[in-house]
Length: 515
Image (cartoon, rainbow, N blue to C red; front, top):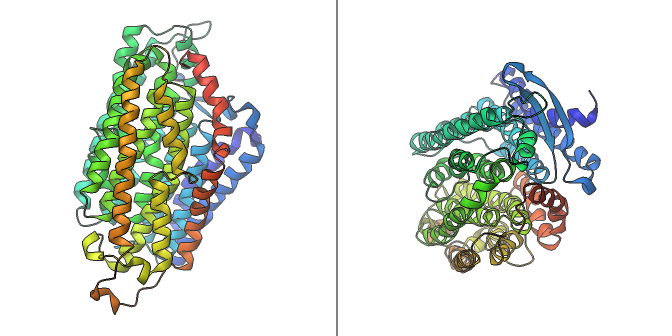
């Protein structure tokens, strides 16, 4: 086995190995456990960085680092993994964000402690998320997809806030409900496919894409199968009106859980649309695109209005994720190269920015022991100038200020809505563009209002006598890479677009979706 076909497997499963090692360490060796968490997530990140140096960016549409070997011959399921310009940014984001979460956990593991279990679950979660982005077999994809449910369930249910059991069960049931229909759609694709000289059924995503491009699936089949994959992916995004599990899960999850949930897990559903739903069911994608665009436009406006009504700082950030992922889905719904590129950039930017926001909210809660905006009462810039300044910078990035990472994904999603793919209603998508523009204005309003109530003003008397430390060294180490990413991606968006564009163009040309 060479580096080219083993790198993905090493990077993906190193965290799972780390989870096993941590499970074997005595629970009294708390610092060793935290160090092992940093070591294994860091080792996976090092492998991911090494892959960047070996990745051929001129051939971003070609699957690289592929490993395709027999796994379950009875059903023709294979261990098939690979990475292209679409999955590379999301894969690297997964490795980076989990490593930073491990560093942050050196500072504090939320009550009730149990450091071993907490970090082992984080590492297992990383394997599930990373594996989903590189799986090229539907069975393998589904296993990685489902793998993330168990660690996140326990992270919320054990280490979450006061209403954690309700939030954990709601998260699990919603996502499991969607997964059942998604699995049924995968099985339907398998039994309806006939590839190769023998006409064998297959779960291979690339073969199914080629089969679909050759007109292999009938229109009626695609319309029905798309309902199954739509439910699975839309709930995970989550799209309106399937979003109701997200604010509860975010609000009750520990800081690291919220960072990984917003930063990576929400991207699994949108990635599934790009990798599976659009290329394998292209006719249905065209038919469903206006409805996806409509739900995305509703999500953008609805989430922005909901944020204006929030009193809990963490819940406000949670609702903002619904709106930001609405822009991602709007870009995908246009079925254009510009729109899908915008969606991928938006996913990366949202992962960095909103992950950073949840880090900050967690640190504010650690100091003030409340997330209620009225209880914090303002004056954060006076009391904790570094933390207040970082919060202001990240919030401004999240509202889409030009020159920062949040701008490009949103503006290009709106741009793609002006001229969607051929066959789609231009008038409808321009209406969605207007709704998205209104949502952008409201987004700026609620973030600025939040900063006014948290950062500005005079600190209440109850906090004046409290000795509260500003940003700690561990927090700086965890946050600086994300802060730099917000700034650098805003100034040099080609860092992402240069990776994704060729792969997205190849995808749209393969299945005839480019408008």
